[in-house]
Image (cartoon, rainbow, N blue to C red; front, side, top):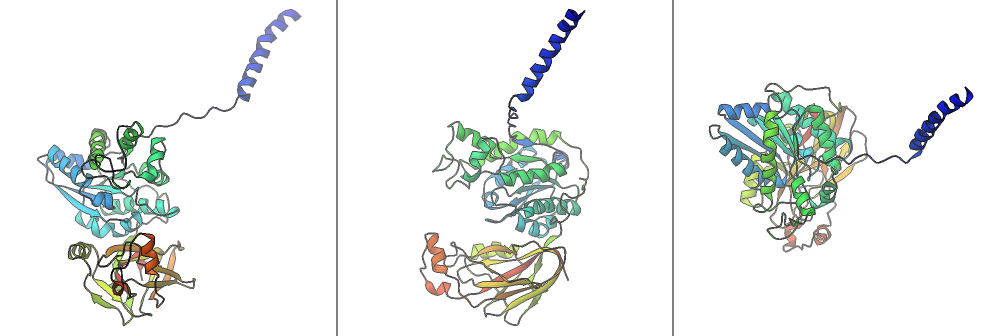
Length: 422
């Protein structure tokens, strides 16, 4: 009896020893998840229904310089028009070079939603969506503001690529900015297309040069060449269309509970004419290149200029964030921003690209997040000059006409508010 029991115990002892040994083995790394070119999620059902019915269809493009170029924006609109010839496909070009999602969500209503889009492409992966918590808040604000205005508007996030992100994507890792955008997209069922995934793969395989003269993908590592780069982005969109068409059911998009209660869904642009100005502010025309001035004037409220130190803008708002949008240019000066009883923050609409005659529409945001509530703001032009020569020198530029840089002025068209002006 004892021998039989011993014989029965032996397999059990061996089994225990075996599983104990397995438990002691080092943990195996999880299998690396491959990035997907397209995440269909809830698809683009409303816009495809309109395309198949013969339109009209309005497609909006919100982004930076990659979208502003005559590249994937133009190519995708042309592809939709050719693929659905009975539909009248028109474009809402809401791309502004050098700007990210913080400004994008503030100008969304004026530049996009007032034109009643059926489809909104959002491209901010390279230009940025805001630091820290602001990144999620700006992207969530774009989605919520759009669907509060029209819940049947379809949205699609697109992720472009640059030298900065190339190695991450080649290693099947999404850059941090894309991870944040994907978090919002997943929560709201917004589809996304990784426009640069195939580019990164071909570069890794030695089939494509990423940076250089054409036929390289990009001359500078950021902006695709119109002929040899942007067609890759179009191809990614075309490959994604069947999945986006098959997903979802036409109807209103639901707004779930926010990921962040302080998201920027209440972001807006308020003309300077609607806030308090000291006597030194005067309304002026747009300086610089006439063509650029014409484009800026279509997107910015009438421009006001302060020329005397001490000239100030003052307003009270109920909300969590604010900024201004005006012109970067060679004659820009410094300004101080005070909020409630906080120490002043100094800013300037000037950088190493502000050469003679070159003015650009540019936002400036107060860098600190504010608690939800009422805040008093004062923006004052300072007398202290900017060391413009040093800033230009760091960018390989010099002053051809020093007199153009002598003034220290401030041009503002709109105040940017996340909340309501009181």
